[in-house]
Length: 111
Length: 113
Image 1 (cartoon, rainbow over the protein chains, first blue to last red):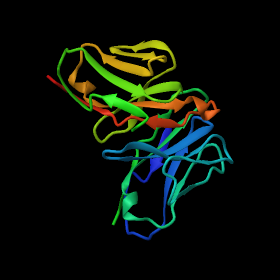
Image 2: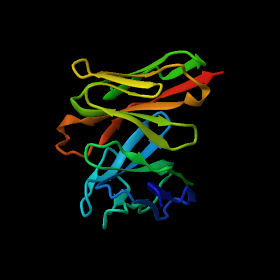
Image 3: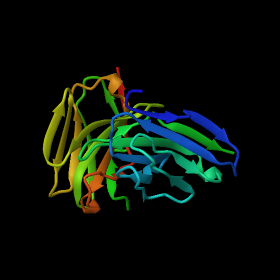
Image 4: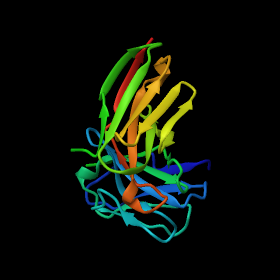
């Protein structure tokens, strides 16, 4: 692994199903973030974590949950997917006062 | 009104032209980021700045904190510069050295050969 890895790269999901998007980084960054990117709305912060064991809500947290059990992993869970959660999801990480490093994104379609 | 406004939304240029993308914001910030996203691709950080000017190759980023404005310049533009350029700010009231970003809508740049 080099940098930040997201999985899966894309997924089609039936509404009502549970889904976890995975994010792993090997840069030992304390901070990690989840964003969604939608046409016309740009990138918006869903949840963030400044250090292992802590998480916080971003601009659009409803319908999503996160956990940060260790430094490297920051999974994003949709407990019961809805069509409005169709989006491209980006995970990112950063050190203190440093630029954020982004994963390649997960394209999620909820039918 | 968005906290971060970019202009123009779309920009078309001929190869070799000098390009400027502007970003205005309405909140006090601790830092401003310029990001690049190629079609269907990931997001790459170009610059992070809190004052003055930074240069990397053909790219130059400037910021005026008093005027709450930043510009991204591309000199001698090339078709491979075609991408979406995104401005993002870190709120100064965040109280942390880890920055939650608020993004502009992005500027779609197309450079023709």
